[in-house]
Image (cartoon, rainbow, N blue to C red; front, side):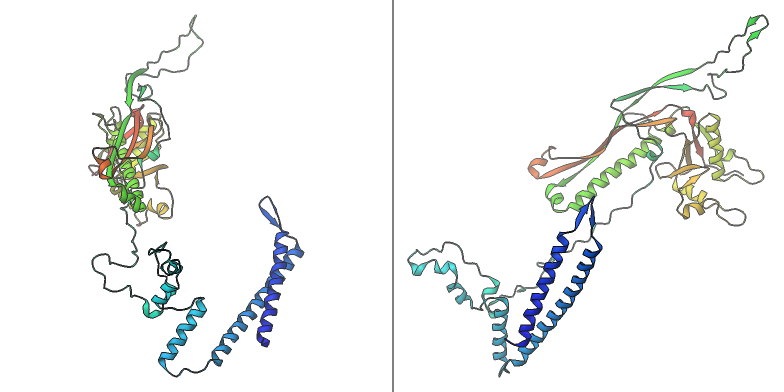
Length: 444
């Protein structure tokens, strides 16, 4: 044994001893309430051992490198290219732990061939002979690239599938202005109070101060007049579906996710349209803008002196109408183009009036009210109102995805239906708490 080999064994023994010491120290650590408790002495000893382990490991790697260089320097020079190739091939077999054989030698040495026992055990091998990569010489390997690939994609190699880019989605929703409320009924029945606090209506609020006596008699209290209308808000179903081959969804999970998300997104778009513009016919909701009793404000009716009203002014004046009906407006819905006009409004010095706070990450608000800018409402129209108080949205069944093959002949065609569905109702209890603004004509 050379001095280097002896030194290598000593270092390996020292490394094993240090690792055993550190394992014993680690085993003594305590865990209390999810925290490892280690004493100062234990940590110091553990860190010291780890430093020694790293140094010993580095010395072992250096000695191994010296040993390899020494072996290479002691090898005799080869006389020919063929001899060099044979020596390299033999060396590869020794390094990998197998002896290099030809295909015939590998077959004769196989357990399957030996099981025949010279033919005495019959002509059939008990199991098929499988050629292993390590059993034959390099000359017996077959090139897997026997022909260039054709078609799209190619005929060999792994395929890298680029992710599908989904279309952008509308992030702001009219639903966000309503508090969440659920129902287990198919129809919502409610009473709508007409007027009472609104001037000019048949209902009157006659509350006033009353004296104890009027002359020699006790004073009579005034009578108010309240008018109620009974209404119903039936639960309506919003749904749509898409067909897909079950193998496609099993092989492409990303596609399944996109189908689910797009179907649910489609429901959200229709939901916003129904809440605002539903005409109440057939299976449609009665949207807020189509509910009788909703107040209106025309931009062209605004003040023009000394400076013409802007769209922001029109929204504030419409909010006043809701306040006069004794309802505090809680939100504004308007088209993105109208919201753009408001955000880009500047003062006489060219300074933005609204956009600065939004550009700095502030919540989109105008006159202290949150803004939902959405194409669900027509350009040139805005809706201000007490969402959640003057109107209530009810969830009978929240949006969900269902999958079935029980449709037409889908079962025998290996096709499935992906169905998105929700059920909801909308009750506009106090129409006067909402004001529809029209931006159809600028003040002159």
